[in-house]
Structures are given as structure tokens and as C-alpha cells.
Image (cartoon, rainbow, N blue to C red):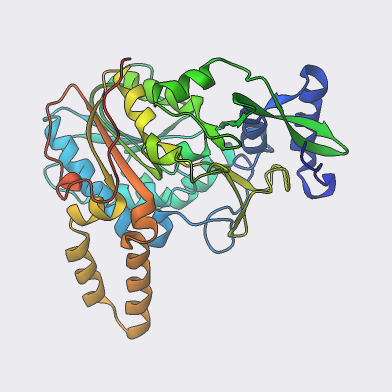
Length: 393
């Protein structure tokens, strides 16, 4: 068992919820711990009205680096809408954070020509985030095209479901190969805080997951398994009658994600732009995130009639959408050297193949439409790697 955490640094309400559940049920899975730490109503990390993104927060996202990111995604959405024909389309963004990406996309869509009737639906479960999104999006709300919902539509529609850094924040199970067997890492009470302990897996779905992607962990190797991502992807597929799914996140195909070189998995805690493995510190006050298994997202999508259109790294995706020409335009429009340098640094952050441009991947799936030769996939897969052979549903 790991050392117990110090209760004084946690959100007291979140810690109390976790310890109460442990007292009632016994040790809980790390996935349940992560669910409470991040999403406990009114208290979890993502449910509070606090600064999480940007220089005063805990991490950055691509949408915070420069509006060019949203402008280019809007360009891809317009092409997708054209492939769907003249019918009205719905663009759905799930987990919109502060709303920066939604603002940039909607601003670009409002000025797009030859776009059929459309609406932009933000799916958000955090009331605090909805309030921040409404405040930021106020300049574009007059268009009447932006709406909110607390879940994906139940009636299938035509359009596109997009997400940026959503799946990495889904609660994950943690496993470890110990004494030649797959074991699960649970969370138990210890002192005034919590600590981990290893026991028999809570569900056979964990071993089945690794079997499906052809992975056997080395002795002592830890890993994360995101069962929630499977359910989410299938729900996304069911929400579409015809359309596309655009998923942007950091991660790898399964054979890379579960490579033996990743002895401790990919789970990280983020606080004030510092990443570490102190998962039981600052409970409810720090982010917890794990890299995405894109092979399993593609497999899960097939269970909801989603076919893979393509898979690319962020650099290839944005360059295919004209990032180079757009960057030249922005740099030429800079009014002074300082603005030019800021713009250049932001664009480099988005495109650098040695940083976010390589780590972040773009998975595009389609439903009810033929292969579409999308602009964002025009440069091929770049360094994204292969998702592996198709597997049975």
C-alpha cells in the first residue's frame, strides 16, 4: 500500500465523499475514485468554478494557444457539412471547458459561405462551466445558433460530434501485472486520507480489454484501462443518423500505449502546470488524466456503425487544413514585432512535431456517408501510427 495522503490539502467535501463510500463499500476502484475527484457534483475538480486552463490554471489546451486552432477546425466542419448535403446540420462539442474553442469555431462558422442551416450544441455536465461558456460566448449568442444540453441527443441527427481533450479525463481503471496475473489497483482509506492497494480485478472486462488489443503486460508493469470510453463512443455513434465524429486528444494506438517501455502507465496529476504521480494529493483540487487508446475508440465505434475515415497527428491534420498559409496571413497582419513573436510562438506550439503536434492525435469516423477525402487527412497519417487490424464487434 502506498503512503496515505495528507487530508489538509484536499477539497474536504470530495475527500469526505470518497472516504464515506469506502466506509460503506470497502476499497473502491481507481475509476470510481477518479470519478468523484473530478466530477463530484458541486465539488469535483471539473465541477467547481475555478481557473483550470491557461497561465493561472493547471494546464494548457490547443484552443488556448491561438484562435487559429478553432478557425481550422471550423474549416473541416464546413467540409463535413457539405458532404452531408443541403439538410440542416448540428455540430456537437462535448466537454467545451471555458468555451474558447466553441467561440472560435462559431465565429468562423457564422462567417462561412455556402453552409447549410446549422446549430452548435455544447454538451456540458458542469453548471460552473456552462456559466463560464455563456459569458465567453455572449458575443455570438445573438446568432441564435448556440445551445446547451447535459447529454448527447437521444434522437439521431445529421452532423458532427467533436471533442478536444475530453476522453483523457474519463475515469480509468488501473491495473498491474503481479505474480504472473493481472491485478487491479484499488483505493482504500489510510490515515486521514487514502492510499492504493492491489487486489483481484473488479470486473473480467479489464482482462478482456487487454486480450482484445493483443496486450500482455510485463511483470510489474502498470497500465490504465478506459472502459468509459467504450460506452461513450458507442453513445456518440448512436446520436448520429449521418455524419462524422472528430476526436482530438493525446494518446496512441494500443500497441504503443501499452508498450513495455511504459512501466508505470500514462496517468498523471496536473497542478499549476506541474505533472507528477501524486494521485492522492490535492484530491478534488488537481487534474487527473491518462493517454487515450485510439485503437479501442475505433473498435468501439464500429459497434455503433462508425467507420474510420482517418487517423493523423495534429501537425498533419492542421497543415492539411491550410495552417501554413493561415499562419503566413496572421504573421503578415501583425502590427509590431512583439505581436509577431507571440503569434509565431503560439503557432509553433500547435504544429511542433516534437511537442503537441505529435502527441495529439486526430481520429475521424463517419456514419452513413461514403469516404470523403477530408482536408485534414490529405497529408496522410504523419507520425500518428496505425490503429491496427479490425477486430470483431
